[in-house]
Length: 306
Image 1 (cartoon, rainbow, N blue to C red):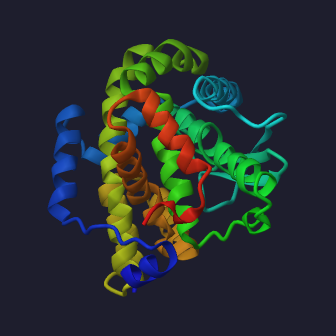
Image 2: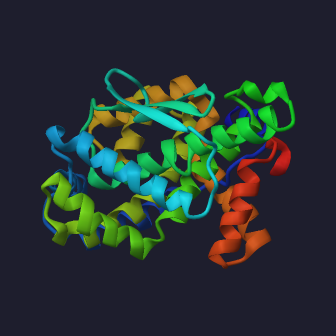
């Protein structure tokens, strides 16, 4: 059911991953965060050390968004008068959301129900803002709606191949704007001090985050098994807690997201893979050429990826 739904809605089915793959990633984390406690407890303790204090969340997010925008503008010509509003909310199944309002204006909401680790600030600033959803929607409006008069693109069908591009390009955009070494330097030298956190933790945090990116594929597998009836809710929450090393509350929130958005979860990681393949096939490793290909994709119809 999961694979059929993903194929019908997004035109793509992610590969399957055995539990042994995720176990190997957990082993990497275990070596990175040594200790006698369970790995989940060690990870949560480390993440607590890099969690943004609530009073500094707004300051850190605004600095992150400003840098994402500046780096994006070095490569992309943004529409005139583009802008966004930033709000903090609670009680949602998602961590952050971009509500595109039209005329190059977005409302970006950030869920503060759970603690926000420092690296998530940059992830969400890029993903929801620059060069992610805000830029994608603005360029679609500028190029296709205003430029070509294709009014059908003034609507965005969430469950469609367009979401594979939107979510995939938003996640790839993080690495486009912040190659690994530059990201580490910016977080260490700017965001960590703004958050009142120890910059000496930045390098370890970056390594932990990269492993967690690969563990993110566990959500696909849990969704596949849960929606296909191989796991009940308790089993799905237990699997998410195991492979995301998350608290029961965070695992339950993830399963609620799957309840609401079902196979949509493939768009974040598998969508990123597909967009990266598309960009690299046209631009290779040259950074400037990659940005040109990336921009071409953002301005193209959803049929650009097959």
